[in-house]
Length: 361
Image (cartoon, rainbow, N blue to C red; front, top):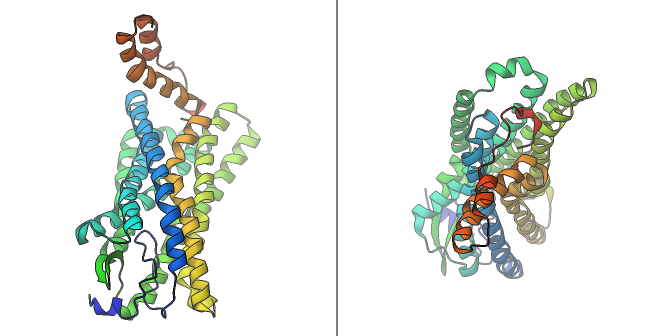
């Protein structure tokens, strides 16, 4: 790749953010110092909060799934992979925080590629596993007989492996074109496309994100939940309704948090066609990108919160987990706590007679 083509029109006041699907390297110089200052003040503290909450929440989800659910169903396998997707995404945040604070990439080219690739893998794998969870609920309720044969642990592991491969393929351009580069006074870590194809690649990235992250899951949601609703209206069933509720909330929440960002990326990629005052519109788009980006990134710590408020069984498992990890250990140091009572509480397990569809988690 010819590095000179990426720095010819470089503007040091432009925020080259490696976590977005756009750049302005082919646009005319445009002063954006105020936008950069706004991002430097707003993003690091918010990302830090998202990182802490998301890390704790998703680790607890993984512990609950492994300790109590023991991955005995396809749904649990998908939920575990969804939590891992969020953890991949979260792992990159401290590096972007440091990048925002210093306005200089200090981690080298290899880490730039690795972290950018990990960011995209986490994003696309999350999209795909939310789709799989929706299809899983559809099969369990609309095609119950077929689901008894298809919804197995083996198929769950196989489909999860294929999903990770697809996420890796979808993230490859972001990994391949991300690189560090010395720009006048500091190092950047961003997408650097060849000058001749920069516009086409930027538009391709925006279209890919919106097709895979908005259009595809929306179509799956419409088709699957239309079929589910039809069954529930014909034969109302409280257990089935509870089983659908959690996955429905997860998917709707994903749309609410990511759609503004996806649409902003799309408008950004095609701003030359949509707008005439490129500099002014570019500033507004940068500001919109920063705000919608914060909203989108916050999503990686939202799923555990959804499980707490919507998943009845998850709250029970979480209570037992805290008893096992904290209460029993505290009881050794605080004699007034009843150890036997705590042990009984922590060893409780849900009745084996409860059907998988009777709960949301």
